[in-house]
Image (cartoon, rainbow, N blue to C red; front, side, top):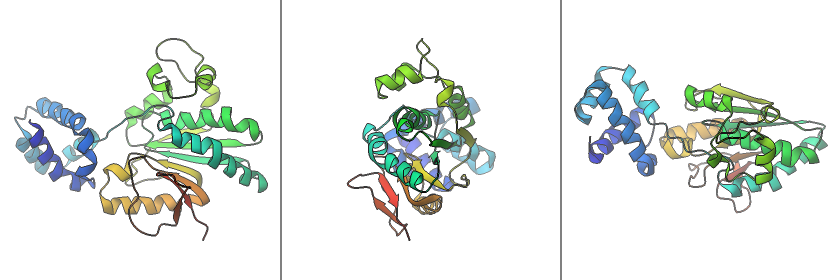
Length: 273
């Protein structure tokens, strides 16, 4: 299957999966390789034959949907985002909770893949924030549609290359085991619940002080679905809560009750209405 054939197939198939082809431009090589392997496993000669298979067998759409899931994750990815959260927005939120006599910071990592983002937040909380807010506790829900990735997340062991952006002192404390794939210490796994959910159709109830939805909905979802998902994300944020999207993403147009956090490109606050 040539690149052009794969692109044509994806442009045809994406709307039927409520996805947008444009979001796959930078990663189409990865997706096309997966589709090519699928064709070979089915004994199909080309993209046209696979399209016919999709039109004949509804179950094959679920397979293609899984092939289109792109996962690029590491700890402390986009350092400026975590710096803004750890040094500004989350301390302010914890201060507000303390003033109200509340102790629990509620967080949702949407499209969590194999857990790097969720565990980054946990390590940041317990090592960077909780010492200044000793009564505070973390409740973190991490969701993804891929059961295999969630199983990797629950194991909590990672190649050292995935940790290179995490502050070195945190790596030493949170990953005390040796080897090329150290495992996260149990004390930094507390309060985290990994759930298999497809963001397009299912979300945890909330409410949340912080929602991270990065490099999923606002990259790969079709515009009408983006607006639908954003509305449901905002509904799960407390007033003054924080929404983080990907650094290359933008929100769909409309009044969703959000304002930018300073000059941030991807961090938003839910306004109080």
